[in-house]
Length: 461
Image (cartoon, rainbow, N blue to C red):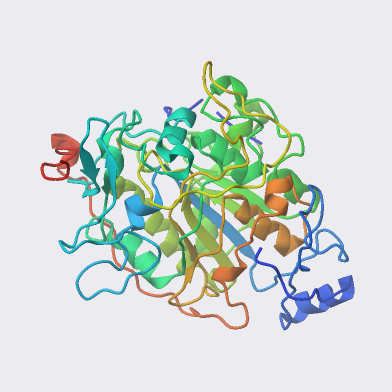
């Protein structure tokens, strides 16, 4: 695995299945013909780390021949309500997904106490630009916001009033078009109530190895059971991490030594070349330029939306479209409000949180973080569908493990729901790519004049 510093390490920059179609020969026939869909056996207890989705089939067997490429585009720092809370909300629209409830004034009713006896209502952000240092998603800030499920500490936490801001489809035309076309998940939680690195570690290893905040000195600690890349290498399955060379790739969440670079970690231009030729790998992570395109504050979110639109278009126009699954999601909520309390989770292992001085362990890693936007883009994605199955980032690992019958890395991914509910593998719903709205244009005026008045007048009492 590769890598590099936080921004050049960030600044340089279940559902339970039907009966198993038993036996390796059945899997081979399904792979050859595509006529059968293997489903994992129903669960009667928690699966263990290193266990297989299909215990009676050889590890490394392809059980989902319809999908040849699983791609992940993980952006940064926005909650479900912050981006998709207004999806299908407004005059003449049908609500889509579990977003905001609107009052008689047509505005969200969501609010939080401001700590001085007043109320801060949710408000539309005045521009596509963000404040430079707030909101935040540190372990302590996130738990203050959560407040044992009461969700009343967003504004009184150091994140402050901006945490109640949101954007609409007028601000994010491509994202709303994407979420209105392909199935959206309205119960996709980030993996831990913490920052970027802990959550991205769950994406690649199903554990943060104790990390709760972005602490550089902890990045060299390897996961005890390896990463999904180790599993793929062991079974001869192709993978890549496409990244912008000015910032670190996602593989860097476990290694900051550039001398350890894998030949599978390649510049972003190779993604667009691979998509154009149809030569996509079995599994890939596609990284934005974290300096300008990740959508972390204080960035203008239009840059990130434009990058996502470019990636989605490349996938849909690729000769490999007919056998590709692309997941668009976010590493964590960034400190922005969400109205759905995150439920308890399966702790991945016995590793305790490595806590900053004076901070609490709370529920440790037996707790999901806040919801984040998620959409599954594929010819097999269900039309007009909202999946309310509970997911976190290890659901992506569960899908990869299900496809190739790979051993689970930890208890978390072993027991995560895979992405099957987003799909109808019997027949493509989108044999031809749909036409999506264009993203917002940039540069925008706010990049010069600033993000505007936050919170806006009239949004608090």
